[in-house]
Length: 338
Image 1 (cartoon, rainbow, N blue to C red):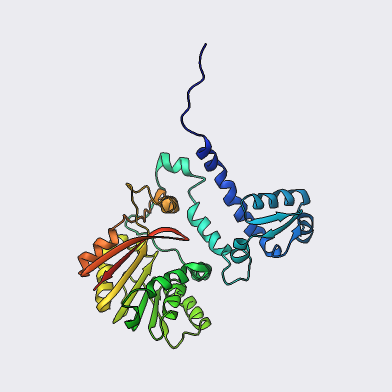
Image 2 (image 1 turned 45 degrees about the vertical axis):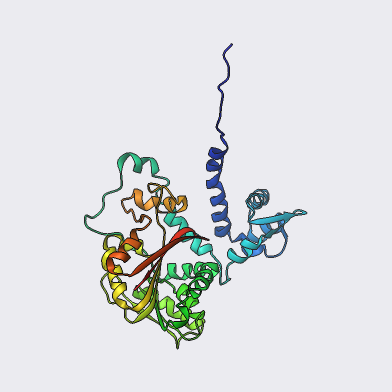
């Protein structure tokens, strides 16, 4: 009699992969349909369907799905936001991340439908010699601002404030700072340090709005430009840069030297970027995050140590690094001391 195969592995991980897109689709649909706006207080599926003009039974099935992935709670037939949905998915909140999640979805998923074709045929034709650009505009900067102040900015500011030199700092730069909430959070941790946000001209106009909102006009300013070719200012004691130097990969040494020259003696350059490890297969969140762009011919991933090595070539007298696993996943913090 033929025996069944002896199986020493589990299908469980494959099943999780198969179901994962349904989880993200439930989240994205909940944001699109604005259901979280109505669930700050308990509500039945029938009530929500009536308010929004939706199909009654399918609304209930959909809400059960959101409850299954712990975005809402269900009790006695009534649905209500979980704390994470209440804090991050209700429109109008200063920490609303619906728009940011939409941007992330468009960034992460463009190659999904064409994945077999891209693997078989390669990336679509590109203009030769044109480097990938940071596709940001003011609307995107506004959306990312809420991400920066929904916890990550506060965490980073507390960490930077713990540096032994922090109390002596007089001026800092947030290089490629976007809406500027991380730079704002760092400046707010110091009693007198001044700060500058550097980004594209249309982006720093958004930064100015938040500088006014947090009443730091007397201590913070902006510089609009392209850090690849324009001056970034001078006499800084601290230069912070996060999630932007991927776009300068082919010009890293010149950018890091520009940073070095802009620092006062004894100043710090702190880089917070993903460093790829294990033959560029980890961290998995970063690999998957950049995959769509990479498949389309715009690989922006940086190997772990790439920025730190550039710091040493620029002349920083010491470079120290660590990996921090915050909300966005594990990223490397490299600290260069001039």
